[in-house]
Figure 1: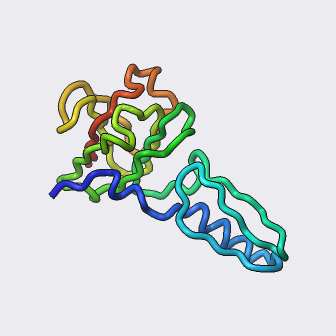
Figure 2: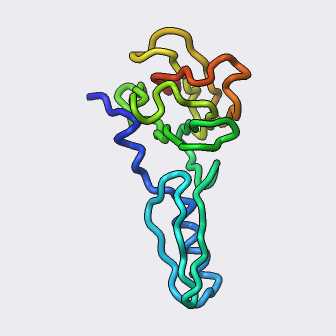
Length: 155
């Protein structure tokens, strides 16, 4: 059974939770809590009745073993791709047609595998390889901006 990235896109954003925990530990009066927030969301923390907005942006909260893809250059815009190595059947994932298909402009590979981005669904057509533990903030420099439709972890 193939899982698409859209189904996995709801994973919790560790950066937001870490920020809430840090604020509580450093002794800010009041309460600090957080729940999963999508890229670009504004969340707030209450400290003695004073709200402190925090925005989930860029590479905040990237986790080891995962691959990420953003809509815009320099790891900005919507983060449409957020998938863990081993999360898809045979390490091959389709990028959902609504959330990210042909929209990825920057990527970060936090996994120990090479990730191959394919220009077509079904892991066909032209491809671009993102080495393990590397990133590319501007896929247009390698002729692959807004091209990716599927991806494959090659371990």
